[in-house]
Image 1 (cartoon, rainbow, N blue to C red):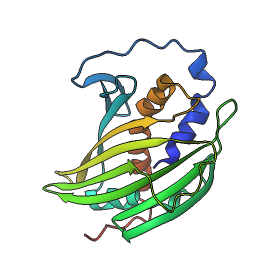
Image 2 (cartoon, rainbow, N blue to C red):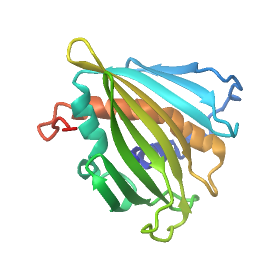
Image 3 (spheres, rainbow, N blue to C red):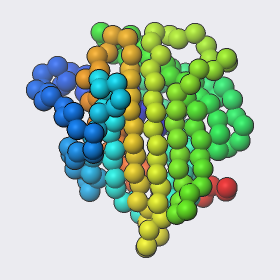
Length: 211
């Protein structure tokens, strides 16, 4: 799902400089900041106080096993905007792998790449999928700036063969992109992810993961 980062950046590139941005709250508890397509979005500051942690919560019509398959799969994202290169650096199992992705970013920003590990673990009522940036010995030299992501996807089984999806994410685009733009991207991310899963879950290629 990291390619949503660049797709969102492309859409927001011009608007972010002409739209008023309010000061973000310093509250430590989650604060609701948006709702769209029956997806609630919450915010709280991260420990460094510059970047925000965003959380989106919404129902998906399908079981956690299929949603986990979508979030763990990379091959169905090949044609997303901005992607220049993708490589699997390490794969311990289908549920534990490290990706390198490089993106072309619009002027005036430098290009970005990212190295992150995807893991999946079983929980009492579903799954927890984590995306965490890390340093890796097989990672190539950065093409501009190396962004970071830390995201948790909580997938809880509920009645009616549905899933309550809760997405928490914090982005840092680093370098010449100020923190407030990283926060704008983070605010859009949970909605984009849940909408993406809702669209894809009925596709024939989506299977149930085997744990």
